[in-house]
Length: 236
Image: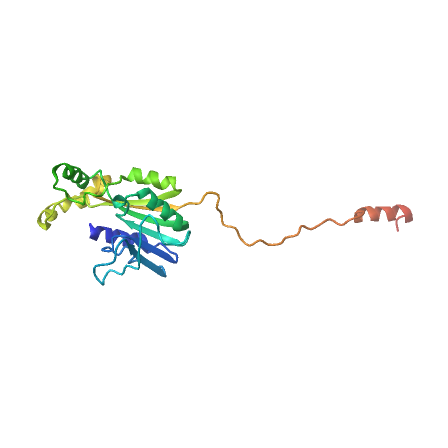
């Protein structure tokens, strides 16, 4: 899962430009590795356990410590499904993003073999993933983003193999990765959704030039003056 997410995030973030980017949560993945922005930060809810994890800010995900409209990109790897208030997290992301800023959300797909295993684990107690997480479907996530005026730009699904615990069985089902991507693409265990913040009524305005309209001369037109002189003095 980490290998697939890392490769897809490298592709998605490489072409996103700006000045400030933030990854919130999951320091085990460097989702901004391929991004070329000047300022990149990694935040989490707790201090790192190893020196390799460069956590710069520790905070509550429902109250982001960033100014409004100050970030060009926000990455949320598996944050919403484990947040107590996922709606508030998204609202905070919308607040800190600049107009046309982008958010990338990674999540577990409930309509997958991993989702079925997770649902069965709640009944049997033999869970595969942490039980405190609530899987959020892609249509549901799109509705939340739409309410915040965020337009979904693209999406990716991956990890079609069953939730096996050993490399031996994962290798046996490795054929399902290519087959799933072709024949049942929406049933991948992991999804990545990229959205853009839209601001209604906003348009780019160029410099305001002080233009004066040419005014017509006051008085009698020149042609009328010529005709008046001709009538009085006769033609030469």
